[in-house]
Length: 257
Image 1 (cartoon, rainbow, N blue to C red):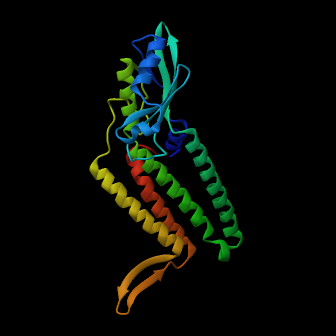
Image 2 (cartoon, rainbow, N blue to C red):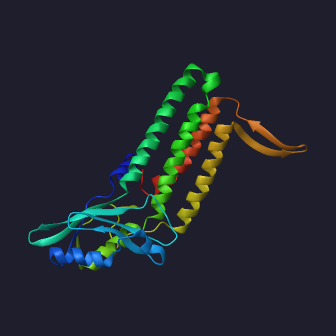
């Protein structure tokens, strides 16, 4: 889990492209192969962003699709041993990182405070930590889902850059995951894995809903629905823990945790 959080915050390892052209021509060729405005991607996929010698920032824009958690390639042109090299990494936009830091920081403080209150006043504040933990799990699931939908963006942007510069990829990230896959070595998750992930997410939602509402089960009887409630708070925390485990299982299976 710590490794996954680090990847989300820092982005990929360094990715370098050795250009076959001089510095000025490299900048112009990459600029010609990309677009400056996101509105350029209204009809077809485009690599959009700023291209300067000192700053390159590119994203993949897909018509009618928005994803705040997609990777940007951020880097700059340098000259090394007589060669022009584009040096950078794939990472989320800094605004999204700030939002996530504020979100998880606030929810973490809320969960800690409500946990203390639950110990001091178990009769009135016992449910508070469940809401905080639920928000943390929901936020984590949202980030993971966004990264999964953007799983091909790093490879696609790498192809655009390589084609524009006729470049050789000098440095590639050591692992293949959402943002750090080599341009031609990305492995898409199997369909079975996707189905299992969705099923686990639904079951986790049921577990967390039951833990927050206090409902253990719902069954049918002669007089209609029969609702059974958890006998104590410990049982509700166990249900919440089971839901969390169901969400973490797909991350473990694909090596994100």
